[in-house]
Image (cartoon, helix red, strand yellow):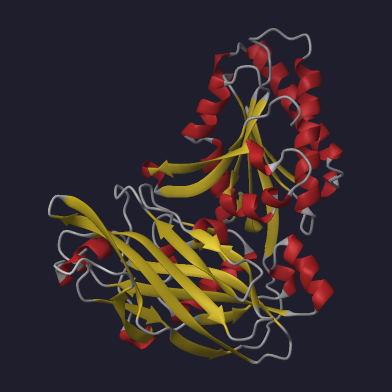
Length: 438
C-alpha cells in the first residue's frame, strides 16, 4: 500500500517523534533451497511509544469497578500502534499478531479493545468522538498521539482483531485473513486497560510481532511467516490519577413503532397511548425512579435518558423483561394491524441537557441504530416478535457479554451499521427475542 492509499483509509504513518523503535522482520520457517528471498523480502516494523493515561475506578465498566474496589489496584488506559512495511511484490499479509509482555507478572490487561467501537468511540466526520467516560479519557490522552484513535475505526471489509490474554501479563491482538480476500492494513492502533499494583510506578515490558504473507511461486500458493528479529523493550512512567470527570454518563433508550404512518388517526392516537404505557411499565419493572427519567415524546416513538449511576447489568435485563411483558399485555386480543411492534435501541455516553434536548454523541448514535436497515429488516422478517433490539458494541462488551440473565449474550448477532449519507459507521449487536428469552 502506498502512502496515498494509507491517507485514503485515514491512517497516517507514525510521526518520527512517536516512534519507539524500528525492527527487522526475519523468516521464522525453513524454505526450499531454491526459493528466492523475494518470497518474503526485506521487511521491518515501526513500533510506536506506548501511551499510558490514568483511568479512575469511577470511570471503569461496572465489573471492573467492583474489581477495583476489592483489590485497591490502579488502572491505566494504554494506546499502542505500529506500522508494517509493504510486503514483497505480488504478496500480501494474511495474518498479523501483535503481542505485549509486561515484565511484572502481577500487572495484567483487564480489557482489550478490538476496535474503536468496543472502546466507546463513534466515527463520522472529523476526529473520533467518545460515547463513554473511558473513551473520553482516551480522546483527551490521544492529543499526544495524533491519529492513533483513527487507526481503530471499524471498516467494512477489514479484518477485525481477535484479542488474547485478558487478565494476563502477556496479551495482544491478532488480525487474520486466511482467504486473502479481506484488507489487512499496514498501520495499526490498539487500546487496552491495564491493572497494576499500587507499588508499581514504572510499567516495563516488550513488544513482539509475527506476520504471515501469501503469494504465488511456480504456480503454487506459498505462505511464509516472519517475526521480529528481537523483541522491542519499552518502559513508561505511570502518570498520577486525576479526579473523575464532571461529565454525566447516562444510558439512553430510543423506541419506534413499526408501520405507524399507515394507521388511521383514531388508531394512531390509541397506539401512542399504548406505547407510552408499555415503556413506563418497562421502566417500572426495571425499578427506575421515573422522576429522574428524562422523556422526549416523538409521536410514533420515544427517547428516554435514564438516571446517572444506575447499575446497567441489572437495569437492562429488567427493562427488557418488563418491556416484553408490557407488549404482551398490550397486544393481547389486538388484530395484526393494531399490534404495537417496536424497534428498540440502547446506547450510553456523555450527555447533558440543552435548550432543545440532550447533547451528546450517544443521543445521536442511538437513533442511527434505531433507524438502521439491520433493525428494520429484523422486525420485518420476524412478524411474530413484539420488538427487536440494537445495542452498540461498547454496551454489549461492557454489560451484555457478562450477563447471566436473559437476554443472554449468545442470543445477539453482530452487525455493522453503515449509513454513508450520515457518515456513520458502528459495530452493533442485534437481538431478536424468541422462546425463553425476552
